[in-house]
Length: 249
Image 1 (cartoon, helix red, strand yellow):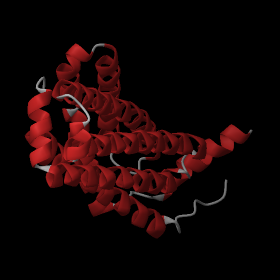
Image 2 (cartoon, one colour):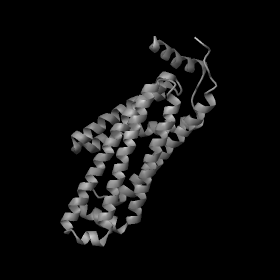
Image 3 (cartoon, rainbow, N blue to C red):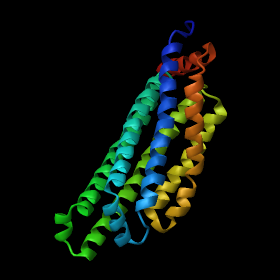
Image 4 (cartoon, rainbow, N blue to C red):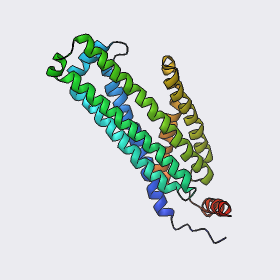
Protein backbone atom coordinates (compact mmCIF):
# COMPACT_ATOMS: atom_id res chain seq x y z
CA UNK A 1 0.00 0.00 0.00
CA UNK A 2 1.43 3.45 -0.90
CA UNK A 3 2.36 5.85 1.86
CA UNK A 4 -0.65 7.83 3.06
CA UNK A 5 -1.02 11.28 1.58
CA UNK A 6 -1.35 13.88 4.31
CA UNK A 7 -1.05 16.85 1.96
CA UNK A 8 -4.83 17.29 2.13
CA UNK A 9 -4.61 18.28 5.82
CA UNK A 10 -4.77 22.08 5.31
CA UNK A 11 -7.72 21.85 2.91
CA UNK A 12 -9.61 19.44 5.17
CA UNK A 13 -8.95 21.71 8.13
CA UNK A 14 -10.40 24.70 6.29
CA UNK A 15 -13.58 22.86 5.39
CA UNK A 16 -13.85 21.32 8.86
CA UNK A 17 -13.53 24.73 10.52
CA UNK A 18 -16.13 26.09 8.11
CA UNK A 19 -18.42 23.22 9.13
CA UNK A 20 -17.87 24.11 12.79
CA UNK A 21 -18.75 27.74 12.14
CA UNK A 22 -21.88 26.70 10.24
CA UNK A 23 -22.98 24.33 13.02
CA UNK A 24 -22.86 27.23 15.48
CA UNK A 25 -24.54 29.64 13.03
CA UNK A 26 -27.42 27.21 12.52
CA UNK A 27 -27.87 26.85 16.29
CA UNK A 28 -27.90 30.63 16.80
CA UNK A 29 -30.41 31.33 14.02
CA UNK A 30 -32.71 28.51 15.16
CA UNK A 31 -32.66 29.88 18.74
CA UNK A 32 -33.43 33.39 17.48
CA UNK A 33 -36.36 32.09 15.45
CA UNK A 34 -37.78 29.90 18.22
CA UNK A 35 -37.31 32.02 21.32
CA UNK A 36 -37.51 35.56 19.94
CA UNK A 37 -40.31 35.01 17.43
CA UNK A 38 -42.32 31.78 17.65
CA UNK A 39 -42.60 31.74 21.45
CA UNK A 40 -43.73 35.39 21.52
CA UNK A 41 -46.25 35.30 18.69
CA UNK A 42 -47.70 31.79 18.46
CA UNK A 43 -50.17 30.90 21.23
CA UNK A 44 -50.81 27.16 21.36
CA UNK A 45 -54.51 26.35 21.10
CA UNK A 46 -55.57 29.98 20.57
CA UNK A 47 -55.52 30.85 16.88
CA UNK A 48 -57.40 34.12 17.45
CA UNK A 49 -54.69 35.40 19.81
CA UNK A 50 -52.00 34.20 17.41
CA UNK A 51 -53.58 36.07 14.49
CA UNK A 52 -53.76 39.30 16.48
CA UNK A 53 -50.20 39.00 17.72
CA UNK A 54 -48.83 38.36 14.23
CA UNK A 55 -50.92 41.22 12.82
CA UNK A 56 -49.52 43.57 15.47
CA UNK A 57 -45.91 42.35 15.03
CA UNK A 58 -45.54 41.62 11.34
CA UNK A 59 -41.93 42.80 11.15
CA UNK A 60 -40.97 40.47 14.00
CA UNK A 61 -42.72 37.54 12.32
CA UNK A 62 -40.97 38.31 9.03
CA UNK A 63 -37.66 38.47 10.91
CA UNK A 64 -38.36 34.92 12.07
CA UNK A 65 -38.77 33.87 8.46
CA UNK A 66 -35.43 35.50 7.60
CA UNK A 67 -33.79 33.62 10.49
CA UNK A 68 -35.26 30.39 9.12
CA UNK A 69 -33.97 31.13 5.61
CA UNK A 70 -30.50 31.80 7.01
CA UNK A 71 -30.68 28.57 8.97
CA UNK A 72 -31.60 26.40 5.99
CA UNK A 73 -29.06 28.15 3.76
CA UNK A 74 -26.53 27.26 6.44
CA UNK A 75 -27.73 23.64 6.33
CA UNK A 76 -26.92 23.46 2.60
CA UNK A 77 -23.46 24.95 3.14
CA UNK A 78 -22.81 22.65 6.12
CA UNK A 79 -23.85 19.58 4.14
CA UNK A 80 -21.43 20.56 1.37
CA UNK A 81 -18.54 21.22 3.79
CA UNK A 82 -19.03 17.90 5.57
CA UNK A 83 -19.20 16.09 2.23
CA UNK A 84 -15.84 17.57 1.24
CA UNK A 85 -14.32 16.49 4.57
CA UNK A 86 -15.80 12.98 4.59
CA UNK A 87 -15.83 11.94 0.93
CA UNK A 88 -12.33 10.48 1.33
CA UNK A 89 -13.65 8.13 4.01
CA UNK A 90 -16.58 6.74 2.01
CA UNK A 91 -17.78 8.84 -0.91
CA UNK A 92 -21.09 7.03 -1.38
CA UNK A 93 -22.17 7.34 2.23
CA UNK A 94 -20.96 10.94 2.40
CA UNK A 95 -23.09 11.66 -0.67
CA UNK A 96 -26.09 9.96 0.95
CA UNK A 97 -25.69 12.17 4.02
CA UNK A 98 -25.44 15.23 1.75
CA UNK A 99 -28.66 14.31 -0.05
CA UNK A 100 -30.56 13.76 3.21
CA UNK A 101 -29.41 17.14 4.51
CA UNK A 102 -30.48 18.70 1.21
CA UNK A 103 -33.93 17.14 1.69
CA UNK A 104 -33.98 18.78 5.13
CA UNK A 105 -33.25 22.18 3.58
CA UNK A 106 -35.88 21.76 0.85
CA UNK A 107 -38.62 20.87 3.34
CA UNK A 108 -37.41 23.73 5.51
CA UNK A 109 -37.83 26.14 2.61
CA UNK A 110 -41.44 24.95 2.28
CA UNK A 111 -42.05 25.80 5.96
CA UNK A 112 -40.75 29.31 5.28
CA UNK A 113 -43.24 29.66 2.41
CA UNK A 114 -46.03 28.54 4.73
CA UNK A 115 -44.95 31.32 7.08
CA UNK A 116 -45.13 33.79 4.20
CA UNK A 117 -48.71 32.67 3.51
CA UNK A 118 -49.59 33.25 7.16
CA UNK A 119 -48.25 36.79 7.23
CA UNK A 120 -49.99 37.59 3.93
CA UNK A 121 -53.30 36.36 5.31
CA UNK A 122 -52.94 38.14 8.63
CA UNK A 123 -51.19 41.30 7.54
CA UNK A 124 -53.40 42.43 4.64
CA UNK A 125 -56.63 44.12 5.60
CA UNK A 126 -58.07 43.35 2.18
CA UNK A 127 -57.36 39.65 2.56
CA UNK A 128 -58.67 39.59 6.13
CA UNK A 129 -61.91 41.26 5.00
CA UNK A 130 -62.52 38.40 2.57
CA UNK A 131 -62.86 35.90 5.45
CA UNK A 132 -65.06 35.62 8.46
CA UNK A 133 -62.93 35.81 11.61
CA UNK A 134 -63.54 32.13 12.40
CA UNK A 135 -62.53 31.15 8.87
CA UNK A 136 -59.35 33.19 9.06
CA UNK A 137 -58.45 31.75 12.44
CA UNK A 138 -59.03 28.20 11.23
CA UNK A 139 -56.98 28.77 8.08
CA UNK A 140 -54.08 30.21 10.06
CA UNK A 141 -54.30 27.29 12.50
CA UNK A 142 -54.08 24.82 9.61
CA UNK A 143 -51.05 26.61 8.17
CA UNK A 144 -49.33 26.72 11.57
CA UNK A 145 -50.02 23.01 12.07
CA UNK A 146 -48.63 22.21 8.61
CA UNK A 147 -45.58 24.35 9.41
CA UNK A 148 -45.03 22.41 12.64
CA UNK A 149 -45.32 19.08 10.81
CA UNK A 150 -42.84 20.39 8.25
CA UNK A 151 -40.34 21.03 11.03
CA UNK A 152 -40.82 17.43 12.21
CA UNK A 153 -39.99 16.28 8.68
CA UNK A 154 -36.85 18.43 8.65
CA UNK A 155 -35.78 16.80 11.94
CA UNK A 156 -36.32 13.39 10.33
CA UNK A 157 -33.99 14.14 7.41
CA UNK A 158 -31.56 16.05 9.65
CA UNK A 159 -31.28 12.96 11.86
CA UNK A 160 -30.67 10.58 8.96
CA UNK A 161 -27.95 12.75 7.49
CA UNK A 162 -26.25 13.41 10.82
CA UNK A 163 -26.24 9.73 11.79
CA UNK A 164 -24.40 8.87 8.57
CA UNK A 165 -21.96 11.77 8.96
CA UNK A 166 -21.22 10.81 12.56
CA UNK A 167 -20.66 7.21 11.54
CA UNK A 168 -18.07 8.42 9.03
CA UNK A 169 -16.48 10.68 11.65
CA UNK A 170 -16.31 7.70 14.00
CA UNK A 171 -14.72 5.53 11.32
CA UNK A 172 -12.17 8.17 10.29
CA UNK A 173 -11.20 9.30 13.82
CA UNK A 174 -11.18 12.87 12.52
CA UNK A 175 -12.81 13.83 15.83
CA UNK A 176 -12.76 11.98 19.17
CA UNK A 177 -14.76 8.80 18.81
CA UNK A 178 -16.76 9.55 21.96
CA UNK A 179 -17.99 12.75 20.29
CA UNK A 180 -18.98 10.96 17.09
CA UNK A 181 -20.69 8.27 19.17
CA UNK A 182 -22.64 10.94 21.07
CA UNK A 183 -23.84 12.27 17.72
CA UNK A 184 -25.05 8.86 16.58
CA UNK A 185 -26.98 8.19 19.81
CA UNK A 186 -28.39 11.73 20.00
CA UNK A 187 -29.73 11.73 16.49
CA UNK A 188 -31.16 8.24 16.74
CA UNK A 189 -33.23 9.68 19.61
CA UNK A 190 -34.20 12.67 17.48
CA UNK A 191 -35.14 10.39 14.59
CA UNK A 192 -37.42 8.37 16.86
CA UNK A 193 -38.86 11.58 18.26
CA UNK A 194 -39.65 12.92 14.78
CA UNK A 195 -41.48 9.71 13.87
CA UNK A 196 -43.40 9.79 17.17
CA UNK A 197 -44.39 13.43 16.54
CA UNK A 198 -45.73 12.53 13.12
CA UNK A 199 -47.57 9.39 14.22
CA UNK A 200 -48.73 10.55 17.67
CA UNK A 201 -48.84 14.36 17.70
CA UNK A 202 -50.28 14.37 21.23
CA UNK A 203 -46.82 13.24 22.41
CA UNK A 204 -44.94 15.94 20.50
CA UNK A 205 -43.83 17.66 23.72
CA UNK A 206 -42.27 14.45 24.98
CA UNK A 207 -40.56 13.86 21.66
CA UNK A 208 -39.12 17.41 21.70
CA UNK A 209 -37.51 16.66 25.08
CA UNK A 210 -35.31 14.18 23.21
CA UNK A 211 -33.83 17.02 21.15
CA UNK A 212 -31.62 18.22 24.02
CA UNK A 213 -28.72 15.75 23.44
CA UNK A 214 -28.72 16.59 19.73
CA UNK A 215 -28.52 20.32 20.44
CA UNK A 216 -25.67 19.74 22.89
CA UNK A 217 -23.86 17.62 20.30
CA UNK A 218 -24.16 20.27 17.58
CA UNK A 219 -22.77 22.95 19.89
CA UNK A 220 -19.87 20.71 20.99
CA UNK A 221 -19.00 19.46 17.49
CA UNK A 222 -19.27 23.01 16.17
CA UNK A 223 -16.82 24.34 18.76
CA UNK A 224 -14.49 21.34 18.28
CA UNK A 225 -14.32 21.66 14.49
CA UNK A 226 -14.00 25.44 14.60
CA UNK A 227 -11.07 25.31 17.03
CA UNK A 228 -9.33 22.08 15.98
CA UNK A 229 -10.30 21.21 12.43
CA UNK A 230 -9.92 17.47 11.88
CA UNK A 231 -7.26 15.15 13.27
CA UNK A 232 -5.77 13.97 9.98
CA UNK A 233 -2.76 11.79 10.81
CA UNK A 234 -1.13 8.99 8.79
CA UNK A 235 -3.20 6.49 10.78
CA UNK A 236 -6.51 8.19 10.16
CA UNK A 237 -5.79 8.72 6.47
CA UNK A 238 -4.61 5.16 5.94
CA UNK A 239 -7.75 3.65 7.43
CA UNK A 240 -10.14 5.05 4.79
CA UNK A 241 -7.68 4.14 2.03
CA UNK A 242 -7.41 0.58 3.31
CA UNK A 243 -11.20 0.34 3.50
CA UNK A 244 -11.54 1.59 -0.06
CA UNK A 245 -8.87 -0.83 -1.25
CA UNK A 246 -10.48 -3.84 0.37
CA UNK A 247 -13.87 -2.87 -1.05
CA UNK A 248 -12.46 -2.80 -4.58
CA UNK A 249 -11.11 -6.33 -4.37
